[in-house]
Image 1 (tube, helix red, strand yellow):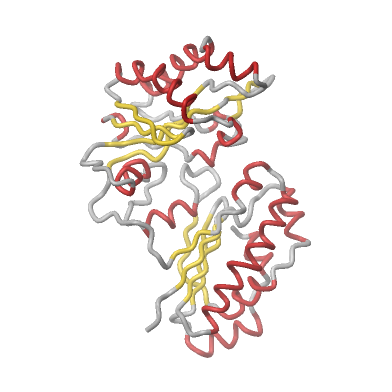
Image 2 (cartoon, rainbow, N blue to C red; image 1 turned 90 degrees about the vertical axis):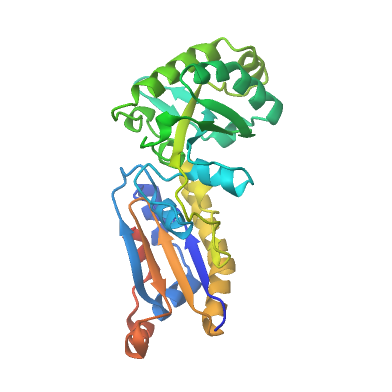
Length: 316
């Protein structure tokens, strides 16, 4: 039998009014055809306040990681995929970021907007590393907006996904579980240090926002049996940026491109007889449709009575 094909589309919908308005006029003909020809498969439903996003839970299962809310061991998995040995230690992703202070709340800007380069990131890491080490946390560079931390405190530490927090009130997502005290204190200490950082002074002189805090995510130890992403899985992530920025016109344009490119490719795979799976993920849930297991009567019924794409997307 030919290889299967699985298309995962994160940020496929949102409860934001702008998204609902964009959906009302969005034409996605390939998605319509796929939903008509495929049959419902697995679903994963939580709430929009869950710490992990639905598509992250889908990816976790595909990689052999436990999809426990806020405790998907992405940092340890990344160490392994990068050729390192995470061992049995607990790891976490540390993202240097900018917290924007408003009149009544503090919000997190997208770290991608920091325009942080490697030398600058390494200099900031060197400045904050001693504070982490005092709490028994080893901190290493991975990318300008990603440092990898190793420490026992992260073994059973639920933390909100970075994408849950971007553009939103930080206070709504700060960890408040037992054992979160040291991390909250560390954030405060690092904030005070960065406030007087020469690197931040230089950034502001160039018109760039200061790096004034960090975010913890992807916590835990790597479970036995964790693997790389399956080659059969394609993640169409072009909706992420516009969704996090609340730019729903750009989001709709990105959806049309996905429909024309990845949607057409999956439709071609289906027409050629390959087993296919389509997974749409929003803020609350992820739903899959598959070419297998439906029976010809059910599949024939779907060709004539399938729900419109907008209806399925709004349900996410």
